[in-house]
Length: 447
Image 1 (cartoon, rainbow, N blue to C red):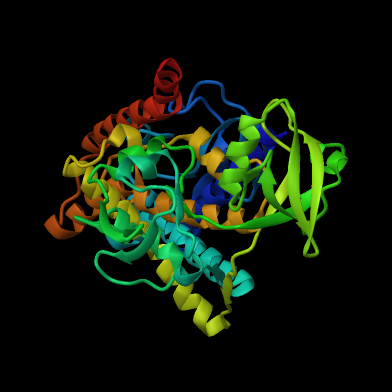
Image 2: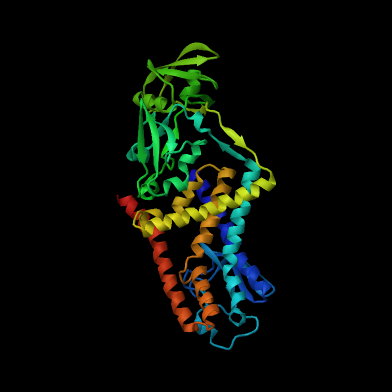
């Protein structure tokens, strides 16, 4: 079921983003009276072979444009009359330009048509982040609430963090909110470090230059979490917790005589008693109570913990939410730029940084959470805008480069040159897709 939820969120998110991206091209083409032959979400052919396996799941012609949903779930396209792209090459445009063709229009109009998809993705990202900020506000944990220290995962331990460390400074400065620990400026900056209180000592923990590579390999993306006491939350009927008599609000203080304060200690104690009956020392309404529970073979009792740390909430008006949304949206662009800069400096591997549909679906998660869904979709919209602006032939950015050249040099590259560039760009993109979708998961499975 979780896989279906992941796939459903991925399909919905990408369909929205691809549709809006292509609508950006479509809208500017219509504005400048350029004929649009097709508007498709997903491809109605075996990309990048426009003459192979041509069929659509749904299609309808309205006016001069055929609208449809293709069978090949990878991107989408608008077929703009008189433009060299994946659906038509220079040979298909051998005749003289017609008034309703892309190639007959001034360079500035063609430039806006090519930027239309990127512009629409940026607008979409800003709208999504602004709406999330306005509707949900922001929950944050004051740094002072993380008074019990942190719990590192494998990546955190490899960086030098230890269970119980208290982070007191970031890059030598005190901080107010715990989420500042995860800021891209810190994790992708040069020579970043955390100062932790470990017992009676202050210790500096450096962020490695190749943090991105290690981060990409972790299924658990939070390299440290605040360590916190807990109480019993929802008890799942039919599980050992319910059979033992645990109730919401109970506080487990010991398992098999071993004192318990934090949830990670509970997990370790349950694993140590997996498959056994054991005693639970519990506090209920201030009174001590002893229960007997049969721990499952997987080391579970069957209840959800309820955190006891106090989170603050920041609410926004519309006038405040929009600037905050703009900042969050362009923060994604900044993060992408920093990541690529690290790759070019040799501080990160492109092979580890690239993620395919499986990785994106995993980020959406196996439970449908609208706040998480819209947050990830807004981020993907900005990533799509950024990636499409890269100066690679076959991407919007490649067309933009050629159009800027035409506007500056006052002469247009030949249709033959554009056709060859389109083919080269398509091959590069296909190689990248083959690596991300097929080769990378295969290599991971082997190792």
